[in-house]
Every structure is written in structure tokens, then in C-alpha cells.
Length: 130
Image: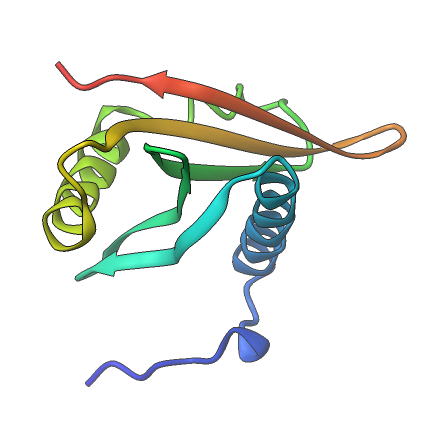
């Protein structure tokens, strides 16, 4: 049986860093006028980190938090399998909550440590499905 572990009890530093990055991304996007519709919208073991809206645009946002780009760029970390997984979850959200006039896209927010603190980058329409 799987047990739900509250965020406050997470021990893995990668999970803690990821959640911290999602909180930074959430604050950044809301400061840019986006409204948060969902945080960690789940479908089984898959999820979309953030679902945000502004006017009729709905963005399914993957957040990548990195200490550096030593192991490649954050966009490279979102491979085709991850994109397919996000698309499946996004489709369920769209069927449940979408409106006919909405425009949908996939965005990426990167949170990286820079010399002066955290650097946040929002890549709009980061990828498209074929």
C-alpha cells in the first residue's frame, strides 16, 4: 500500500529542491499576471507541475530547478517521454476544466542559482506535440 507523505516530511534533497523551485516559479508567474489553476495536477504517477491561465491562454508548465547547467540545460531534461507524459495529464485537465475558446501550450520555467541569487526564466511555448 502506498502512503502519502506530506511535503514537510520529504527527506530527499532533490524533492525538496524541486518543490522549492515550484514555489519560486509559482510566485514568479503570478507576479507576471498568470492565475494558478493547479499545482501538481496528478494522473496516476504522472503530473503537471503548474497549470496557469492568463486571458484565454492555458499553459501547462514544467518547472526545472538546477544548481547549475553542468549536466545539460533544463530544456534538454524534458525529453520526449516526459513531454508525452505531461501531454497525457494535460489532456485530462483540458477535458475536465477546459473551455472551447482556450488556447493551450506547454511552457518551461527554469530556476537556477546564479551569482546574485536565483535566476528564473520562463520559456513560453517551449515545445509542441507533433
